[in-house]
Length: 566
Ligand code: X8Z
Ligand code: ZN
Image (tube, rainbow, N blue to C red; front, side, top):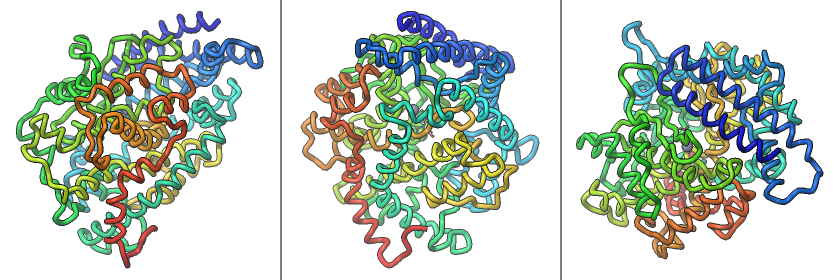
């Protein structure tokens, strides 16, 4: 049975992959329909084998077979109900919602429509609160039409998950972590408590600076920060605010966006630099087909899903990146993130099909980000991007920039699925979906809606991963794991400096250890795979806390006597 499953699922995954690639890089009614049909076939086979695998519960089998049976039972992200009509309906809805997101535009006037790239640029660069607000609202309003579809999707996905024995679709998502769904939810809470003080310090400092800039009318001294002011459409990372928040006298003195755009660095050049980082660690060059088949820039003549992603279309060597690269620091980092996925996919491609996946989904998201932590000034200098290394006195600035990206992200990485888990379980009722979203935004992020929202709005739908049905807790885990991985690699490379100054660029020892972990794929429970590289089998938030300890101290000094929390 397991052998049949591997053969059949591989073939169907390849077909669905080709159709999904086409649909995401050329949105039309036809590509959407073909993608929905082939995805449906793959999901139906996944459901069939999940049910067959469940029949072996309690039967003694060799350990690798047992692991494959587990992966068959909990491997789906969307489980279609067995009723053929409902199965067709849910795949149509999911393909349609992703296409809707891909095509979405904010049109201040009928002839001046702006896509996600353009509205993101405004939110990143403008410091005019009225313009920010208008743009924020314009983009969020584009999600209103998918609210009804989303509700239907929730019902159908739950029905599919229940047929497989899960309480609901959220419980199915939480079942993929080598522990019970409840234990995983507790684990996530535990990790959040560990990093929360660091986030709260950063939040208080940021709020103060924003208040100084925009005034008490816009930013209250002790309340949540309005979501449109943080330099990112979803307030998920705040590094675009760095120029406003830079610690006086500790600025590293370079701006990657400025350097890349003034040199007119092309998307391919940026990607080649990313590849060269992986090569320096001992990984092999990307296949020629990567360069032929990837979509690295936004085509002018058709609609595409610009949200960056990495693909392995044949589950062996057909690696691709889909991205609308602009010469900005943010996109430069994102390419390294995407290539991390591709190098992981290739490292596990000799595993049996069911093990060709990450140890858990947080690992997949953490690989490229780990490499990003090696993009130190010293590295940028070696790449010829900057001409002098900032002095030690600029460390707080460097840490601040990183924290605005990676610490600010933590509660966002957590809250999206806190919301979805509650929507799937029914704890959040359909008529309160949007207000529950804002309750969680406030609870975890200390971020508030910048203007009154109602249940006609569907603000979660304005974030790619919700219409595209991509679980999000993975990014929260990744933002912890990457610091653990970086610490382990830096140790292997013999780096004696503070971790934020360690780069493993060019270090084959570190690269070998990294690749050994990646090559395990999903063949072992993730704690074992984690231990292989780090010597520890638990996710450990002290890695991120230690990394930013000097910044935390500095932030707390700045926050002294001012309100902290919300
Ligand atoms: O979606 C992504 C990647 C593709 S896996 C670009 N990320 C999350 C996001 O953009 O919301 C990376 C960081 C978080
Ligand atoms: Zn990713």
